[in-house]
Image 1 (tube, rainbow, N blue to C red):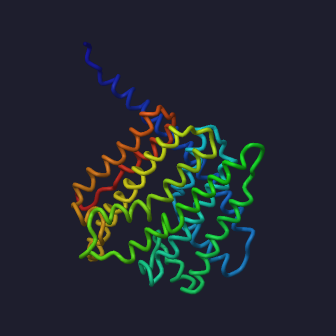
Image 2 (image 1 turned 30 degrees about the horizontal axis):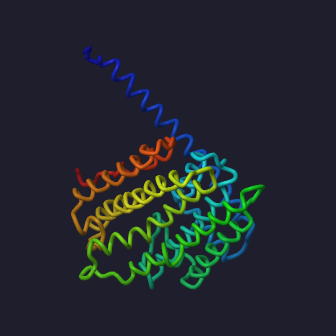
Image 3 (image 1 turned 90 degrees about the horizontal axis):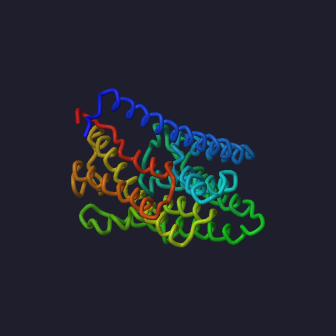
Length: 308
């Protein structure tokens, strides 16, 4: 067998680079579409409370969850415009949860994405109302989403999916487990349940909503559900690794997370395992979505600190 020449390898690497850039460009187009629609939605409202809502929504989020909605929808034949209201609703729900997470009675964080948390910028009372308003606005948007011929059933299923994932059985239930958890009593099984609900449920809702709006078969839905579950765990572990560097820098004790339980090196290995399992779930059912694969693989890009 002939050995590959250096020139051939460079050509292959260049092709791979351009392929990744092409996917990234598609994702950025979707992000811009989401940003534009969120501005259109929120700019209908004026005044102090609306300002606090905009402050939180437009504070630099990556729009990971709404992008998942659009990518999953496209994979099963749902165009971005149809999926867009559902994507934006999920992003508003996510941002409401962040506002409430930061409150003194919850995680008590003064900063979010490098800016003052909503309650520090506008007061605790306004922050509570801003979160409430974003949550209810999300369901107003869902109720008004287009339901053309033959799509009403899909719309109802999507709303049911989002409602369940955002509520007691999902994100809110996970937040309850989080505020009641203690380092002394929390074990790995409890932590996995917490992550699956608090972080994973809305990620799963995003992927499954896109699939439900499209032409996904029951087998397809099972596959993307497995993809999303693994993606949720990977997303949280990546955050745990990044948070561990910040805790060291700021002199904070480790909070109960994957790094706390098994150390940073083991957490990195688990991150790789979950990402690999997410991609494998798509491959086994031959679900063609370079963007969903890319979004999973991108989670492996954990910045190294302190010479690591």
